[in-house]
Amino acid sequence: MIPSQVEDALPELVPFVRAVQARRPDDGTWCEAWSVRDVLVHQTGNAEEMARVLQAFLAGSPVETRSFEREAPYRRMSDAELWAAFLSRCEHLTEVAAAAAGDLSPDTEVRWTGRTVTVPFFIEHMREELILHRWDLTGDDRTALRSLNEPWMTEHSVVSVGRPLLAKGSAGLDLGAGERVEGRLRTPGTDDVVVTADADGTSIRLAAPEGPATIESDAAVRLLLLWGRRPADPSRWHSSAGPEALLKVRALLGGY
Image (cartoon, rainbow, N blue to C red; front, side):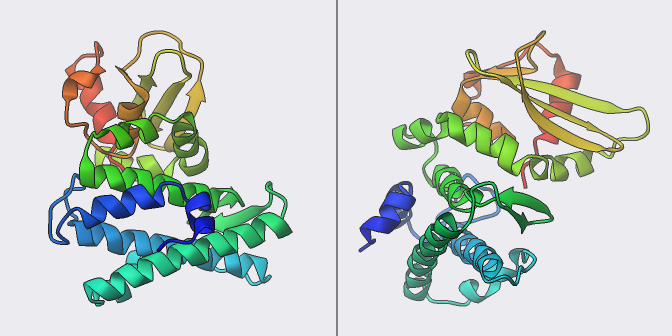
């Protein structure tokens, strides 16, 4: 049973748990390299690492973020042990986040994956991970679409996550001097998401709609594209950019 305070802090946890429990651990997912069990391992490692980093900062002894080697112990667990660890790590994260919210200003900057984020990032990012990876299991069901369409999801991805979303895709493009890729991802009635890449780096930002969009879609599809996902129904996005420009922008949106 999930404690009420955990459900309150992570309202997406129960839908994620139900989606996992409705499938076999070795079932495939929309995240092409991962089975359902791999997704659960990843989420357990996420919850542990966010709590570890935030708790160390609270204690006055900041630590650097570990990479995905943090998942190795969970891969060796039985399914029952993994379930218990996942729920325990989520509960611990909510406890640490509550303590941080009580002790620190929300504007306090904390080191995370080579950059700084603010205190609310940690619980919000776990919520985003639960939504995104639930979609990896279920695809475009009603719950996924409702959650992915939430404006805070786009804002968190662009403002709080930002350039790491473009690192893998940019490296694959291998842009030389003078080469540049720019794309505008548009959802009517909202700011555009503008992504750029050149030999000097990448950028991602929200901006008022201007000129033609590279890709126009609903907010859920745009969020999926930012994270390197592909919606099941391609007719939900539209483009008049032409094959060359579109291919480069899609390549840039390679996800983590």
